Image 1 (spheres, one colour):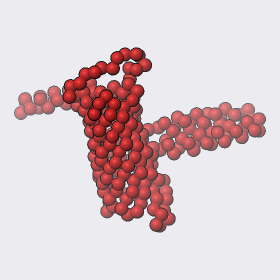
Image 2: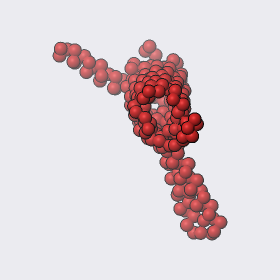
Image 3: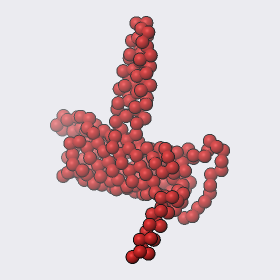
Image 4: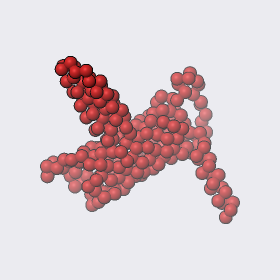
Length: 224
């Protein structure tokens, strides 16, 4: 038993500290398609995602998704920042223009509002953590907790913004130096619904190798 515990501990240690190709890039973008069930309804979900590797194994997630449910509800999903940022920017721009027309000396307030709008816009949907599996494989649990859904149902004239979140685990395999194949399972929730369960697949692309700015040569190690 002790030997088994030590062996499992060694594997976990190796996963956490081994070098992975995926996190050697700054950006991972991918298209995805999934399906599942929420309450009594089934759903189909498609969208685009981008992940920015901010630290060695930590990424910031950005998602733009469309979901259709069998009960005729549609969800358009994005981050809270993608809604709040443009609103703050427009208010700041309008304030700056108004102050410029009236020759008000407080024109800096509008400029500050525009800058704040840009900063809020880049707030991510959530975060992920990467466990490299060898050189080409990767397992990453993710937590998207700063999202919103624009929920609509034309048959009853319903449309509202609602808080939304999702949690899951994504498995990524590099097909070559840039292309990735993805599989994931997740649970999703929007404010008026219960927790849903589903899974899907995706196809992605890596770009902006981290050492490109340093003019270093990208490693060509291929263990699998």
